[in-house]
Image 1 (cartoon, rainbow, N blue to C red):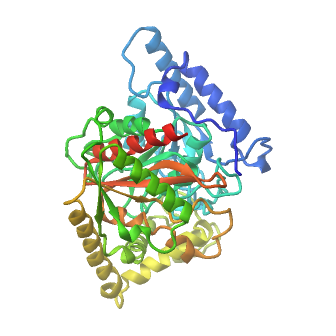
Image 2: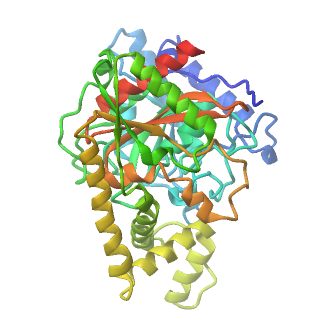
Image 3: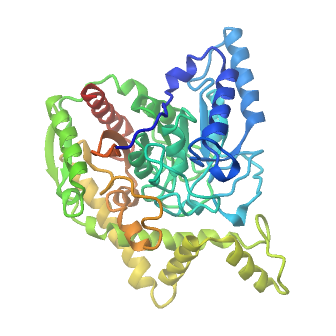
Length: 488
């Protein structure tokens, strides 16, 4: 039975602290004691979630919050709240490595829009958080700066690629963190670490300042200790951004206010395709209990079919790798990041820089994407994948004609052991079976804790909502959270 003594911090608890400066200092002390790798002399758990700390910037912001509080001024919704930023988002004064050696030491000249919005709301940004290299991975074992441990089970992975962000919330190092989700990289780590993770609708949150993996799939979203905090974070992050042409001008809902509305009368879609062979029995039972709980609150359970689910993983891994092979061309040693010094020609410098700077998983995906886009195979792979993507999107649109949200398992298994799947990338890819379809369709989704296995490993339930209907999704998430808290 897994047991840890970490305690998560909520946004309300953080805002209630007498001094934002003292709170930030306490969190830096906790990170110093428990987070650094054991190889660096840490005496605690060695979670390895933070890569760089922005102490000067954080303490300056905390001092502003304390001064505003003392002056009786209105405080922002995140005033004094300690928050961590996944290291694929730019933040001036802090390295932006994307978990890769090719960007080691790179200091970006501008802040990501998400970073700007958080600070405008009063957040205290503690630093940059570990992740799989260029957000490519499902276990946070692909980081050039070492794997992250799951605070709920130290011999298990925290998930990926935003595993460090999930772990930092689960360990209480931060009240909230930012992650990114391309094919499940917020929702799967949230499930593995027992926290809340939200995937906003594509275009709901700005990607400006995000180091791109797959531009038609990448999204920025929050990790928090509970659903109310997730709604608060999304309220701050959402909205049109003139610096990101892919953001939508759809009105931003009152996500926090929506949580007060009851869920009775809502139609809950349950896809048969998400309950087939390979689903862990304990996870199945936990999801069924969550559905029974929603039914007891007055929701109607509606069977739905997402009939092209079996094609979601191959479709995702063609499109995502194709976009990655294009996006990662910019890392050539010329403009920023690592440059190989052992080259006599420009082409040799490009080759050596990438050989030295990219890790094996990134190289694998670049090769897959380049192959899918090559002249002889473009129609057979990339074009076909885009056609199937349209079918997957249509599946969701048709399902949402008969339901308000779709509920199912987030992952087929609980968190697996560190090193268990590193030699079998296909097994790692197949674990994304329940997450990639929502990514391809552009809809919103979230993972909410809904119990534990007999061993004490967290289980997450997945809730998927219609495009730009995060409010209803969050309502259902809070209902499940309330039921879970009542059950103990």
